[in-house]
Length: 303
Image 1 (cartoon, rainbow, N blue to C red):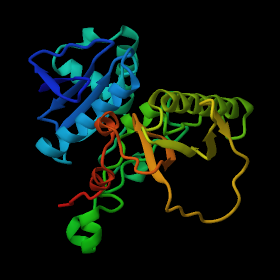
Image 2: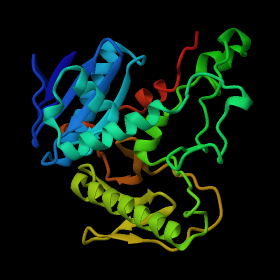
Image 3: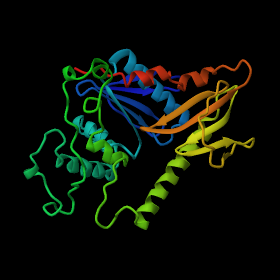
Image 4: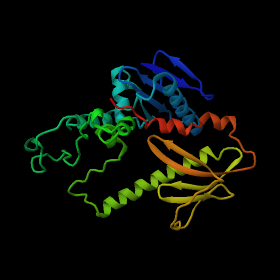
């Protein structure tokens, strides 16, 4: 297990013990389970968090390879997998009790779900057989297919059943799986309101990140896409939502796109208009990652 603290300039200081703090950005590497975590303190500037993301990407590419699975989490919002890692090294005292309880509940819930083995139809639980806490709508993991049975291009790039799929654990944590219970059906006003509140929080968080980051030196934001909404930045630095965009297919040779991702979410896609001779500053270079690294993550060899 390796523990590295990311510095403002992108360098890393390695230590023997894991020490978390609100102003720190920490990278943890589990060389046995081939996992990497980026942990971000609550008082870290947004730019330092993205410097940490760049440092994790560089470390993974240069020393470990894409077989290592990266994961990000914020202080007081740690994932259950991160908490499980802390349990392995006896450091669960570094996180609040409420986070520990939430993680334990998720881990226990996931342990009751058969993810890897096929179960005969007769043995599968039915709604009438399941208790109130059973989530019978969760599906098992897709059956794995031997790469020898796939076309060459699919075996190289990965195919359904072979590409990495989110575990039940990570899906439940991220909120990407909505489990409907009898008292919360699609169309219920309470469910609609919950979804609206959730989307508003995501939007507010994304706009906050954009404000903190600012536009790269020598560029200005022409268009910003967040979810299915389109914005522009005013001269006062505010974000103004545009009317519903017209139908069509749009190209641009005069814009530079920038995609901002955080904690497994695409926060925004910006279309930047460069001034004449504009180049990324050294500070912006520190946090920017090459799109080729993103594409390489999906070129997964199978078998």
